[in-house]
Length: 94
Image 1 (cartoon, rainbow, N blue to C red):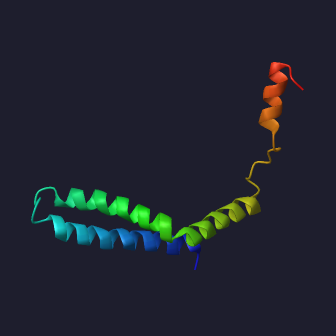
Image 2 (tube, rainbow, N blue to C red):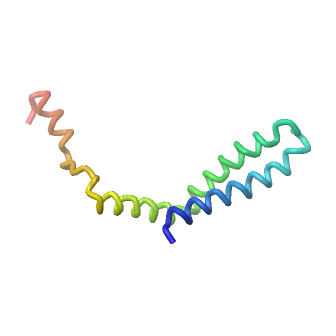
């Protein structure tokens, strides 16, 4: 299975679980805006939890993207330090 499918499914599932829990907890206190509180709270908590606990999977997704771009030849070839050289030459330094 591709890493991005698993990563996306885990993040969506995590959001759904947290949304449900927060909705049940807030619907009695704030019946009109419970969905908004649960949505924002679920999104923030899911982001924090996935950032902490899904790092290896996120790294695999990033590597797959880099490898996919490298195989198609769309990765820009940039010389390391080329922007510093351009700035130095514009200021007259060498």
